[in-house]
Amino acid sequence: MNGAQSLIRTLVSCGVDVCFTNPGTSEMHFVAALDEVPEMRAVLALYEGVATGAADGYGRMAGKPAATLLHLGPGLANGIANLHNARRAHTPVVNVVGDHATYHQAYDAPLQSDIASLARPVSVWYRSSTSGRTLPADGAEAVVQARTAPGGVATLVVPADVSWNEAAPPAGPLPMAPPPATVPVEVVDQLAKTLQTGEPSVLLLGGPAMGERGLVAAARVAEDSGARLLAETFPAVHERGAGRPVVERLAYLAELTAMQLQGTRHLVLAGTVAPASFFAYPDKPSDLVPDGCEVHVLASARDDVVAALEALADALGAPASVTRQPPSRPEVPSGPLDAQSAAVVIGALLPEGAVVSDEANTAGIFVPGATAGCPPHTWLTLTGGAIGQGMPVATGAAVACPDRKVLCLEADGSAMYTLQSLWTQAREGLDVTTVVYANRSYAILAMELGRVGAGAGGERANRVLQLAPPALDFVALARGMGVPAWRSTTSEEFADHLRRALDEPGPALVEAVIGGPT
Image 1 (cartoon, rainbow, N blue to C red):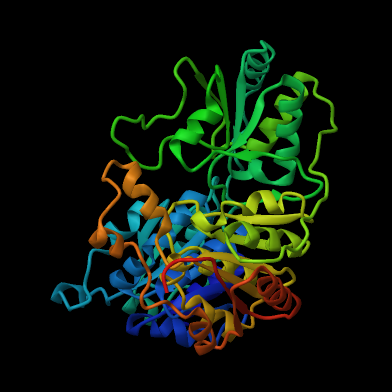
Image 2 (image 1 turned 120 degrees about the horizontal axis):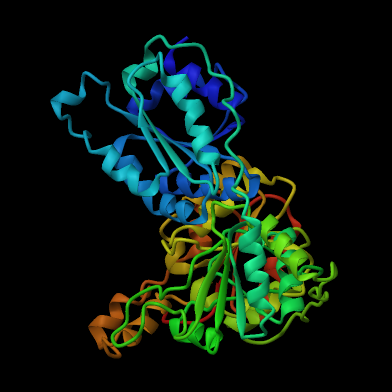
């Protein structure tokens, strides 16, 4: 048995049975070994950023890692943006990167590169295997490291000769990753006393606290103590909708976050970190914690944040029942299509149990409000801010949850980073409906031009921020990759097209034209 065969069998025995691939020459023995291990599902992506983003979406929804298969340093480099997002989401990913044969690396062949320097900034663990004797154990260790709280990207580099040479037998699963740390009772009790002072307090949530159990515990704390309940701006997984506790997310714009936190004396962190501005702005603070506010850590990302919230609620003597979002839906609107009417249509039609991959950016500002009372659903956000995440994450989520409808809300500029996701969705028959908001601009950058003090921008500056002319034809692009698609220019058309896409299984795309130059 060669190294590739033993590695794949090891991954499967450790519970990793999906691999998002974009291989090259150095990975051919891994590819050949797929026929020997049919339990491993290989999903081809036409760009490495799709493979890494899909692994992120899969891990968020499956609660366990998928593997990637990337070609040398350049292939890894193409996938780094979405590995960055996965790192910020604490998503478990086993990131397998091929390398030149060990003896070939001395010749500085054209694709030779410093893989370690590329991988380490986005990885919680890194190892380059040196022998088939150790490769299976290295693979098992990668799975454990990826799953160790709070979760992350474990990168395993496999030189070509390690892959093709004889190897040790497959490794069985190593001992399970250690559980999240328990928050000491003293920390919980001290925070209960702090909240009972009645001073203005905010309980800021992130990570597992954004699941239903965590939200219920947090709502108990907030309703009993009077603390305000807020969530990090971009949670990895947010369970929301009718019947679930309501939590407001911190705003993206620093000045709006400052307004949300104004007057707070105690900021209690549960599974997240203190808020900071996404970017630096002239004469504006980077630290968004208000003056005079004390920051308290109930639980870090490495801790059992849900258990800590439940312990805090019990320490306060909080009732078990909490206020939950009542069911409601807007009516389908009529008339011109814009960002607000598009959001209303989505709120009217969002299916129960849907998984929403949200990279709508500026065009999606109205969607959270329009969908708040929809049937229970799961929301996935752009955790690391590196655009090009939405469509790959939707792809991976659909592989993880074949019984749930996946809705991808995508900005047109971001869509062009990883549009190849549509081809993978078509090939795999994935149940993903993509809405592309066509405002034909990088609208968020047009806004930021003024916010950073660069001025309004003249003709040449604004041309850099426009996506037309020529206008992108997402209907043609989608159909060219095997995905049915329609263009909507009115609210009625958008409702008809979105309803049709959601009702039919398999991938579909609706281009929602909401303005911009033609």
